[in-house]
Length: 114
Image (cartoon, rainbow, N blue to C red):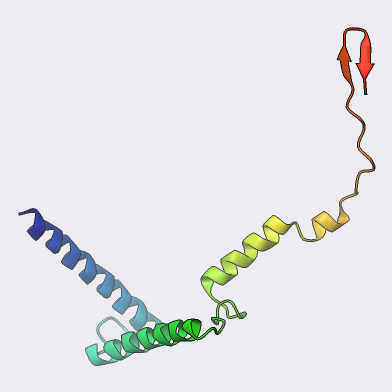
């Protein structure tokens, strides 16, 4: 019985993901719900899969992926924000550099050891 429930959940979730992706693809194409045929949607999915396979094949051949070569992806853009925030950028260059640090003095009884 547990296997049937698990398979049912997987099928239900898959239908939800495919439905949402179909909606996003029709919206991006400027069409209304149901105006994108099943064959057109299948062609879009095939193109996306072939792009991923071609990129992976390029990675195995030692090529640099488009996202690392300066292509604009959402993840690449988010990573660039993190790099600019964490590196400090111009703020670090403008910060005054302190001179030699003051020595630390330890007082033991009446004697200061610096």
